[in-house]
Length: 189
Image 1 (tube, rainbow, N blue to C red):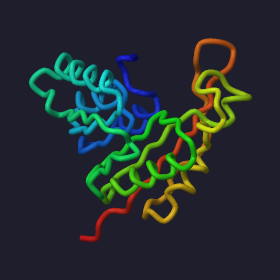
Image 2 (spheres, rainbow, N blue to C red):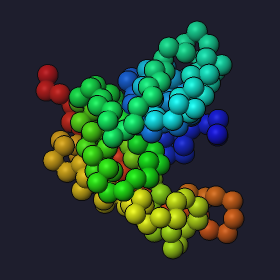
Image 3 (cartoon, rainbow, N blue to C red):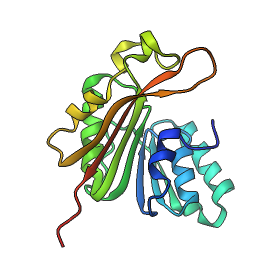
Image 4 (cartoon, rainbow, N blue to C red):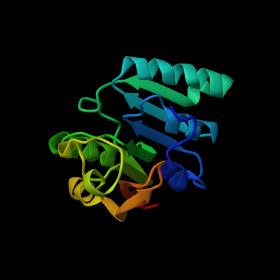
């Protein structure tokens, strides 16, 4: 596991004031831990018992007395229901699943975004298979940012960015990632 956050998470979250974050399909929690080190309270959800235990261990090592900033939850994203409008930042980073499940997870993630909050999605783009490098080789689990934009349509979020982005990796070609950033309008005062 890389000790640092995903490059897109770092780009988006650097400079944001600490708040509550939800990391769906968190794996060993590299993004959640990075945010917690910066004062965020993070719920990290993953189906793998091994990844969850590793995330808990890393939280204890890296955060010490602040390990409680990361709540690690062992749950399958197809059954996990986040509290609605509860998170300032919701992340779905490299969850590569087929379209029906992707739509379900993205809509659930969008619902969890609080007023003024952000939804960040990064994934291996469909174009990566032919024109990029790395990532899954099954086209059924690859998608574009426009697919995610369609998934969350009607969920009350404003689409800020939906694009393919190049991610440098070792070798001759860059990886191509789907990148989506959406915002829920602030609550009326």
